[in-house]
Length: 361
Figure 1 (cartoon, rainbow, N blue to C red):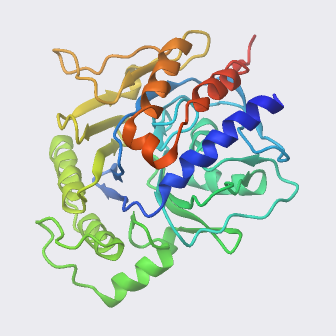
Figure 2 (cartoon, helix red, strand yellow; figure 1 turned 120 degrees about the vertical axis):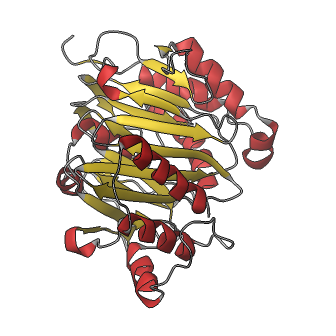
């Protein structure tokens, strides 16, 4: 196990450095009893596996040597978008309607080591999706687990939303978890500045300009103001029209490096997404998926086209499939040029995932 953790974290340290200064944007639309969560990923690569994560799985967190890992059994199934393999998502939604997504934040300062067991900054999202159904439950986990400081520069914050309409920004500032929710989160958006800074900027710049055309200068402040303004002015219609409004908002705050656009229909438990490589909108209905443990984990490639009936088809995520994906992802010349050889990622992750078992066995 020590060797597995060391291999994984050598790879993870290199991978996470690539989070630096990426201009992502998130927002939440609410009205008419419906909730939509929008997310742009601005990044150099659009590869990913979309994974159906099972409930009832016994897990241990991926932490650096010397840190105490967290152990838990997943209580909820989820669908996540995983570029670096199973258990390390960029974000997703669980069957209870909880959505967790991340964006870069240079001001992040992670907590110092203490008596709490630790979880890394990517698996923290999977932990929340596995264990929580509400924003309040997510925030309460800070008393039980510590968000581990990565061994390299990799600083992010999170926007979280649940099926009751609860939303929160979650940030690590000055070594402490800082959350804005309820009356402290009047604007339901987040970009690449602290929420406090973004809210103050929006207060000082109440007119975000036209809200019907892409931004000419998509700075973090401008993207936050535009997304927040469109969230405030959202008028619900049909679900189809609402999703189109969310995608239009994403397009207005997009960047030349925007590779994924996602709209989570929280109320309907559906995920709509499109990518730079394949702009065709695809939809995943969580209500049709099987989340019980005991059968192979299911996945689809993020670039895969839907069936003739428009349904996204999932397949078994075997160890060979996942290893092949990771080796292909890590061998891309552009990735290797920037980060070197990451091939150890695949084997380290495979070894660790073999320790995950169903709780009833």
